[in-house]
Every structure is written in structure tokens, then in C-alpha cells.
Length: 237
Image (tube, rainbow, N blue to C red; front, side, top):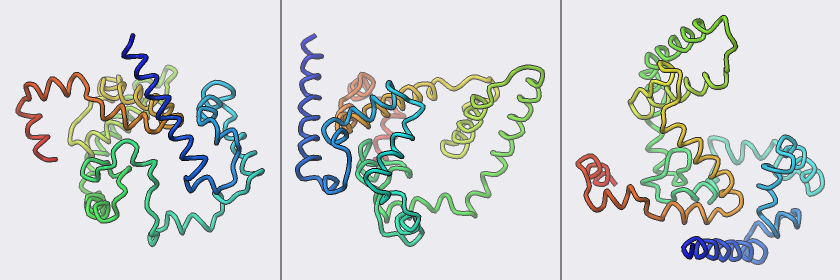
């Protein structure tokens, strides 16, 4: 129980420091905003999860109407997201991993490394993935045809198809989601983790980094007696 109490105190201290930075010296403090969001970052998460989860977009629209549409101007899209943009992804993308050697393409903030790794997704490279994706597409259609006489959760089957494609293209491994009709256990864990990330990332971004840095039981076991596959993986870093 003492450990839980220490963790609770630590998270409160981290939150207090974050709040002071946001209110006093962070550059975002210059942007017009609601005092509720400034004083309590939990408000956003609480509203999305508890108060009215289906109407959060309406609440955001009201805030934009009150404080301005500076984040919604169409002219900013090309400047920020266009091919000639010199903008870098915000520090929010680094809350999971800020080391460019370990960050994914989605969260990578280093321009040069992003340009280098992006070559794997050029048009000529993507054409080599088409046969694998077509195989998965045919399997999806076959499964849906077999279920034609009953109600089908299209969202679920779309998810199974998507992760099968990710497995083939991104990992070179067949997760067999479509073949079994059941999500791979690792994907179930991912969904669970993303729920927690959505909460912690909103309320306490620093807590995300803290939890990632904390060694897991698996990591401690590997460090004590690493197997061959783990040694090869760590050597690549």
C-alpha cells in the first residue's frame, strides 16, 4: 500500500509541475483558452469519458466560437501539413518515445530520419505489397459471404482485416485474424493500452513517459536471463 501511496504522491507532484509550466511559462499560455482547461487538464478527459461523451465535439465547437478559429483556418492546412512544410510534429508525439531510433514513423519527429525511413513506403515499394493485401481482401469477402444469412459486425471484421494487413506489410507476419474470426491476443492488449493512453495522455502526459520508463517484469526477466532473440533485438538498437 505504501508503494501505491508513493506513486499517487509522485503523479500529483508531476501534475503540479505541468500545471505551473502551462500557466506561467509555456508558450501555449499566450493562446486564448478556457480557464477550466488551464487549471485542470482532467476536465477534457472527464467530459469525454463521463459527462457527455457523444457531444464533446459540440463543446469544442463552442470553445472555438468563443476563443477564435485560429486552429481551423483552411490556409493553415497546407502550411502545416503540406509537402513543403518546415513544421515539426509537436512534443505530444514524443510522449511515448522521443528517441528517433525507437520511435515509429507516426511519432518520429526527426525530419532526416523520417525522410530516410519513408522510402519503404514509396509507390514502387507499395506495389510489392499488393498481392498480400489482395489475398487478405479475398479472405475478408469470403468470410462475409459465409455470414451472409446472419447479422455481421462490420466494424469488427474491418478491424480484423486492417490488423491482418498491418501484420503482413509492417511485420511480415500473418496474425490470422480473418482466418479465425478472432483478434490476435496482442491486438486485444493494444486496444486496452490505447484506452489508458487516451486517459493518461490527456490528464498526465508526463505519467505516460514515467510508466514507459518503469521496467516491467518481462524486461527484468530478460535482463536477468536474456534469450537469443532478445539479444539480437537489443543489438539492433
